[in-house]
Each structure stands twice: as C-alpha cells, then as structure tokens.
Image (cartoon, rainbow, N blue to C red; front, top):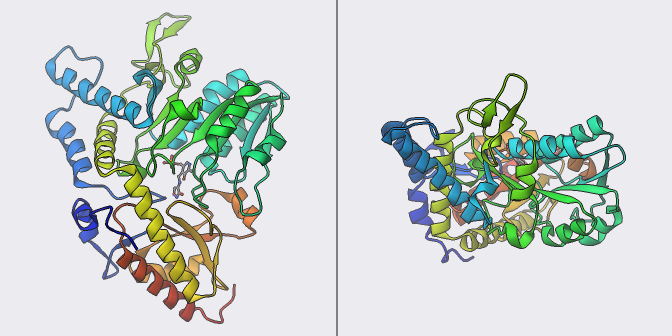
Length: 412
Ligand code: 7TS
C-alpha cells in the first residue's frame, strides 16, 4: 500500500466535514462517485464572491461588477486549461453534466438528425448520457444503436466497429462508467466516428475529477462534466464543444444576456459560449469550481488517480479474503468498486454500512440498462477519492463483514 504520493493527513485537514460523525461513528465517506466533499478553499472562494464581490456579470459599468466578471471569466479560463481546450469560448457553464449533455442532444441533435440517422450509445451509460438521445431519437426518427459490451462489460473499439456505419451521425458515450469504473477508448472511437462524419459527445462526469483530460488529443466534439464531483459546489458544470460546432448551434434557452439584437419578430444571438448562458449564470458556482480546479491541480491528477487505484486494490484484496462477495468490475483501473454481498439485497446491506458510519451507494446508480446487463436489481458501490485512507477501507471491510454476518441465511 503506497500512501507516500499524497500527504493524506494534510489533505484531510482541508475538508472540514471529515471531523463530523455519522451515527456516532467517524464519517467514512466512500460515495465520491455521487458527489465529493468540499475543501475549505472552495467554500472560501464562494464566500469571497458572496461577501465581497456580489454583483451580476457582463453588464455592470461599475468596478464591483467588473471584478465579478473577472472572477467568473477567470473560472472559465481555468476550465479551458483543465481540459486543454483551444479557446476559452469553447467552454459553456451549465448547472452540471446533465444539463450539458442535454444541451448537446437538444441543440445539436434535434436540429441535425433526420429519420434513419443513427446514434451510437451503450448500456454502460448513466441515464443523463443516454436519455437525452433516446428523446432525440423519438422526436427525429433517428435510430439508437448500442455498442455490444464485451463479456466483462467494457466498451471496446472492436465492438464499436460492429455498430458504426455510414449512417452514424452521433456517438454519445461515457469516458468512465459510474458503475464499472472502466475507461472507454474515447480517442480511438472518436477517430473512427470522424471517418464516417459523425460527432462524438463524451460524458466525462466520472473522468474529469480523476484524470488529466486533453480534449485536443481526444479530438472529441463535446465533453461534459459536473463541478460537484470534483470538490466544487453543486449547481455548476461545464460543456466543452469545438468552437465551429458550438457557434453554429441554436440556443435552447432564451432570455437575458444571450442576445445580440432583439426584434419583435426575430432576434440574433451572441457568439458561443454566451448564447448558451441565458439569464444570470452560475456565478458563485463557477468561481467555486475554479477554486476546486486549482486545488486538484496543485495536488496532481496522476497522484490522485494512483491513490484511488491503490485504495481500490487494497479493498479488493480484503473483500476477496472475506469471501461471499461478488465483484462486478474486477479489472477496473479507477477508484470504483461495484459489488454485492452474496444473498443480501444491497439496500439491506446499506443499513449496516449506515449504522457503521460508512457512506456507500446502493441502487441502480441511474444506469438501469446496465443493471439489466448485469442481471442485478441493484448493486453496492464504493468510490474513492483523494481524501480516503487505508484505515477507512478497513472500516468499510469491517462493516461488510458485519453485514454478511447479520444477514447470514436471509436470502432475497
Ligand atoms: N454521467 C455520469 C457518468 C455520472 O456518474 C453522473 C452522476 C452524471 C452523468 C450526471 O451528473 P449530474 O452532476 O448532472 O447529476 N452520477 C451519479 C452517481 O453515480 N451517483 O449519483 C450521481
């Protein structure tokens, strides 16, 4: 076990909530796939705007509003650098990954697809990645094609080729699965999709928080993520889109600040990204996300990924020692474990984890097609992040042991 790469004790000091208890036990937070804990610097950045720089952006002719605009646009620059986008105008602030993914489907999909066009998705998708395209397909008459998953549930280039055709117009897939933690071969898939003239929309909600992303290297057309899964506040996320594509797309929300000239019959829009940010944008959230990006970059994404993976490996070893546990994603390379205690319904098991102060997720993880593929009603999921420790894994294992013992012989 190598905890030398990160100074975990120092990192944990940055997260005030880690001093809290749950059900009288020290809090063991292993649900970062759902949302992450927030370091004090992020809270401070949001408070700074709220207490010292409150004003609206892009419209003030006074200093305070200029300061707020600088903070907000500075956060956009940080997202641009995080993703290695070519231009800052390629970053649209949204309220999260879900809104970003819907924006692509509605603004690109509804306007560009016709009956018979094909949209490639997979059973590995979060509902937020898949449902916007199911809707677009229903409205436009486009056809959804599913990449057949391999025997362990991975998206592979080989299987992608089986559904790719000259009718493919859109590929909408995840970078990292929120249940399996697998990393999809986005770069290779994008290159193949471009050969047939399709665009690629990447759901990177579980990728951006955990690994270095380079949208120019991936060459994907769109990429979406949420701030709250990477130490940022809730209510903010971002969409990356190639500028030529974004700037040719229709807005899907209309209102203040996204317009160029408004007439009684027709109006024109600002260039991207502003045409997609109608109304007062997520100012405080974006500033908080900017602080989260600074925080994570100072620690290092490679170090964070390594740490999560090490914790996962340690936890897997211990779960295997316990026995009677089914692991659904044995060969994942990220910090997610999806599993069930044999013979115990995950929601029953969850009550034991709760009593032991351990936060894990039980359910279908907003991935019902994948639950169908796994032939499970639900799974348990532990997901690690930079603040987790080996000792917390031990507490998780002890809770699992108690769960096994408590429900021994009670079958669902
Ligand atoms: N895509 C993936 C892969 C996700 O994991 C999630 C959220 C989303 C999209 C949507 O993100 P949102 O911030 O807009 O809600 N995933 C989870 C999860 O696994 N448990 O709770 C939320």
